Image 1 (cartoon, protein in one colour):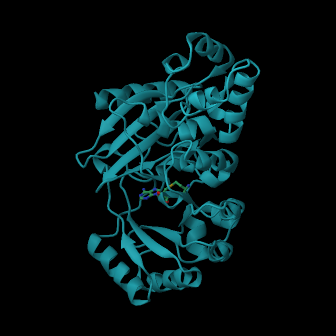
Image 2 (cartoon, helix red, strand yellow):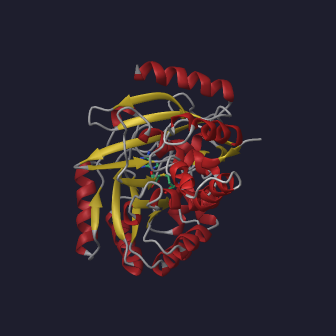
Image 3 (tube, helix red, strand yellow):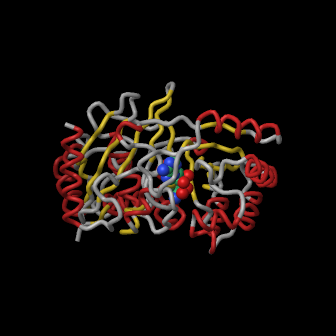
Length: 363
Ligand code: SAH
């Protein structure tokens, strides 16, 4: 069995390479020559590490693997946003979105295939949960885009693709290191945001990391009754406890609040939301509902969104209205990988068909 070097946490991958070279009596700098090719200056195969002698490249290839994700489709929005569909070795498919904005390039990455949470307005929930992604599949999304010609490189990362990152913490934890460590992608911790529905143990684990990773919490409703009806997870992790966790988090937290017409966008709800945000010093991001999610929700009009924002800001809350990007290619929040999968759990044949379809659209 070959060892998958991309599935090993960064330090373990380095140690595996060091053992490999020292056991062959090779000088220490060989480790560095191979190690930086995992993430920092990625290669598709050991054969491409041309500063290593051919004999060592062949031996590396016999001992280790550098598995890639298969790029099954690529679609470009009129606003420059790009959506990438990757097929994994077991047939699962995941999506990654690259959003260019004034010199920044934000990648929206997936942490699970499907999602178990069933938020009422989110399309990923309709698919059901398939499985957690491994480090090589989460950080692998960033790696694959860096390997394109020309490369697409991230300056910012948000865990706002498919899945709930805090339900896959060990892999997300290892991914954060690969994203941030200067020996790997070297993306500043303040440019990396983990978004969660409020899974408390995950928030505690993120807070325990010494780096300044950002936390976003999907709030979406300002009281338990409404939130329970939109987000079943609220039964397990009620709002009060989520707000307390946000207050204890030592960095500024962002609330995400998707605007659902007539459901959570009323003046009284702005007041309730302001109280929660004030309580934990949160910044509020209002997200226009993207059609193509789930349920029968209607978007709040942009005028009403502005009014809602004004109410929050009069209450002393810092608030922004998020721009919709990539809507013409279904690359917006909560829309990923659903066009062919409505109301059905993912099955293999189903996915293959979806890949074909998406490929045609992209071509
Ligand atoms: N599970 C995590 C991360 C993935 S979702 C979380 O929920 O935070 C990223 C964001 O997209 C969440 O805030 C989610 O609520 C939002 N979202 C889901 N469906 C949406 C839709 N149809 N329109 C707008 N935002 C949506």
